[in-house]
Length: 399
Image (cartoon, rainbow, N blue to C red; front, side, top):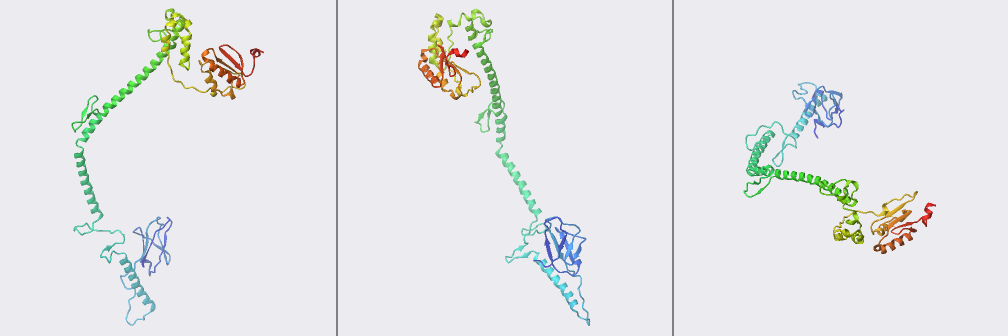
């Protein structure tokens, strides 16, 4: 603890008055510094406080210090004069204060430790000269200069090393990136050859263009395919021929008789189903269509094509409850499978399904059993059978 000064660090921006915790004999002995800057215009609100002209900023270092004047003695004793207690005290106080200040100065100075090392107590040492001998202390400027020189030398050395190491790399990198399109490069090793990134980018762009063209062509092909199937107002594609539908309907839709070459029963089977077996059955069953048809039966069978489609159960259909509803099922032999997907809690009033082949007999019995169990009654129909859960005969429909 110091005898002749005290440090403050305000924690707000409003403090301008500070205590003087030590004794002094005159206000002129008191000085105040803020962050090392001497303050002027000091006033003394009391014998133990000093006030600045304005508040100091929070976190500033404020030091209140006493400095005893030693320019002259406080008391000059004369022979034969009266020796008073006050004079003795004043004289001793001057000496006592000066001793305290000397002790504080000594404590704040660099000291030699028992290990024979100078200790600055963690403080910065100012005004150090430029070193000239190997054992001289170095200034920050001197150290920074050496560091800058070392950095510059290291940079030069690094650049030289990079230049040496990349002597072939940079030209090779250029070849890898932008060597002319269609021409292979050879790297500095004399063996590695390939096309540049620019070449492959161009190839990719060409491929993208070709893909776009293929997409356009695919769209055209799709249109042509549709025309070959159903177009009836002229040739399907160019003057290459007429569509399947045009051949089937003869001279209908603006197609000449020579295109149709007679009714469809003489040449086409027109079958479709979820089962190839059923299609073949119908192709063979329709021999009554004539000699041309019979002659092409094997061709018809070999021309059967299949396609995968996505289906949904009939239970997805929501049937209104406030109106009469009719469900017609004609899926070439798969009527039973359709009914198995029915939501019977929301079932139609009438169901009509195709049942015109002996090939369906087993399924037909199963269908009848399901409908009867669900409360449906057979109303009539030979090949297209009608069932209802609301009425028991046809005549009541019109009653």
